[in-house]
Length: 103
Image (cartoon, rainbow, N blue to C red):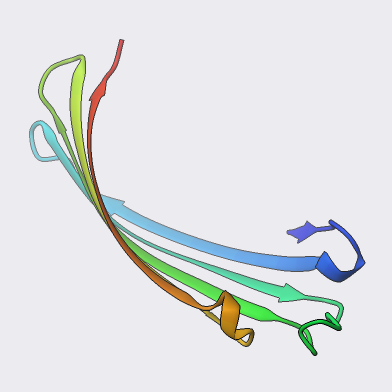
């Protein structure tokens, strides 16, 4: 895709996602991997070049359905972004536990 949001922000984004899941009774575990590459077309004078970045994420999710209305969700995420711009590179790890009521 091309996100045209100004001369210095014109970029090309490539994405790939893969998710595997298999139900076990009331439980639905899944494993996913996603990548996203962003390449800017114009050099940014403030950064001194064309910034490129690559985001890679791995996620493990488990859904457990208590009843037709209640669902518990657990998610573990590890995300890493590499970039030739030091301030844009980061690592993120997060855990989420949620209780969902479907009406």
